[in-house]
View 1: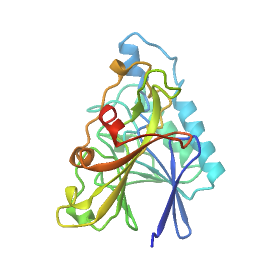
View 2: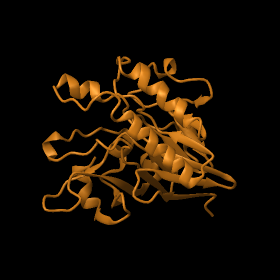
View 3: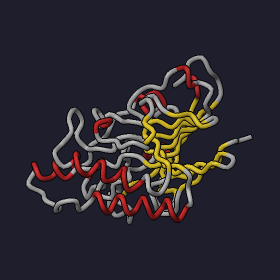
Length: 252
């Protein structure tokens, strides 16, 4: 019997986890401050144009869903090895606004080095290895899970930023969910049975592409271990299944 119930928030790249009385909202890959990368390529969106939009959208979901805690599955900031100039203001602003609405738990990702310098008091920052809620591991997805987590039956992760490409499709270039089922021993060699993996789309609304050649895949060791031996569903933000495992090669 499943102790944790999960569901996708309608038309949003966000998931609800319900464990007994506790209700969690899970999102990933905000990449706040990503404008500095665009500006270096002479693309300008204007100052603070996305951080407020992303923050307000998340606040609205928190209120509409009446959640107790938000779990952020990594890559809150955009730069990798350093803190970009605009991130010094934008990342603390985001955390300050969100923690007014609910408890906040941060599972750092590969872009979050030094983020502890930007995280205000009142935010729970845990190991990048991940957070276990009952039989579910919540992790960013850029590293292989420890055998210590081998009792889980599900993994919820980000990192991949899946975007669907099929010319002439109405959802060409749009963010999508990936749902996978595979053999557990591919990830946890000491275990048998099945494991379910859900890849959450990036919460950043600008993480889509109009052409496939502009899309850069993020490699995940978790997905690498199972992608050739799994059953998959590719699902749009509004919940429509649009492809199976045959569509994985373009996404992961």
